[in-house]
Length: 136
Image (cartoon, rainbow, N blue to C red; front, side, top):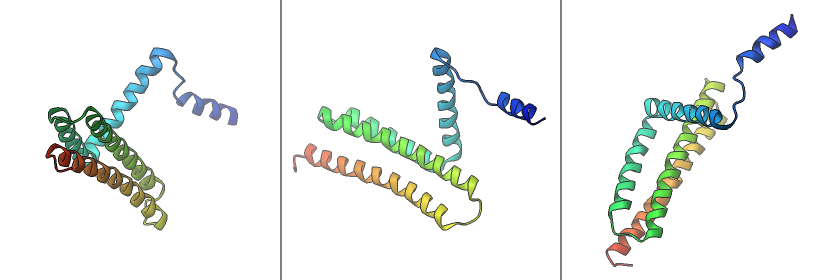
């Protein structure tokens, strides 16, 4: 009976995929994660707006190639950090539905990570604008 239960639970686990099939499945999971974050996380939607503005300005303004690349990279890091922060918050909510000091710290640290990349982007933009205006 126990062996039968193990077989049943093992069959419920998705199998391993290889090659192109693995790529297709991974893409499905990626888009499902993005869709869930866009639908359920206001902060991610706000970061998408920041990312879009950042991308447009980085491509349109007469910036050095290195500065342009850095700004685009920082925008991608912002979205990545927000995705990881949202995943962390979901896991914390799952395992600790009540208030817990460690859960609060974990969520605060995730939020701080997003704040750090936003400050880095802000500093990069400040330097880029100073350079454009020939102030520095």
